[in-house]
Image 1 (cartoon, helix red, strand yellow):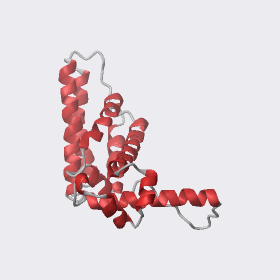
Image 2: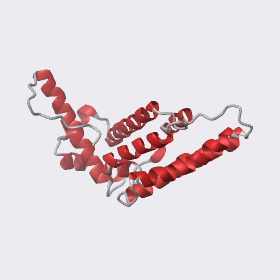
Image 3: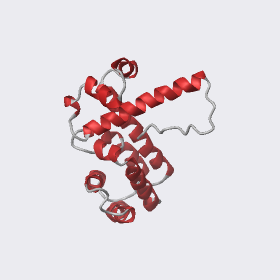
Image 4: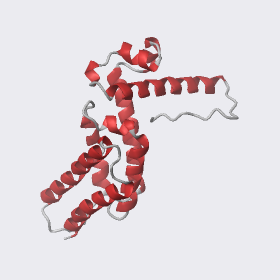
Length: 199
């Protein structure tokens, strides 16, 4: 759930706060319903009517916030990318490799079904390309390396998309590896990449 539920305990809401809360609640219900349906269907097979019935939200409310279902999915993807990008901003992937990877794995496990669906077969994976520049920037190598840049870039492509494949398998197998185990695998692969760049 990317839009977090608010704790109602001991909170006094004015009209503006109440309206904001209703908007957040409606969006949260639509997000959760879409993710649930995407576990079984492709986006092209989902109608607004089906989504709204699942979310218990009327179509007028849906169209108040979104043009179509793709627009809603784009919002979910964007929020997901921002959360991952925020982690990358905190660390240098070369110097803080363990910490960064562990933080990302913890986030993915926390997101659970959201992460599984967004990385699954029923969702277009092009949004993952939006994260690629962040990883490149935060994984800067020795600029004086004697290695061919195209060779280094090739290794990074393998590291990035190979890690995504590993993570997807981890999610689909209900986290069959511990956070420590999957972090260790990705760290070992990435270590070779950094050592290559230092040559």
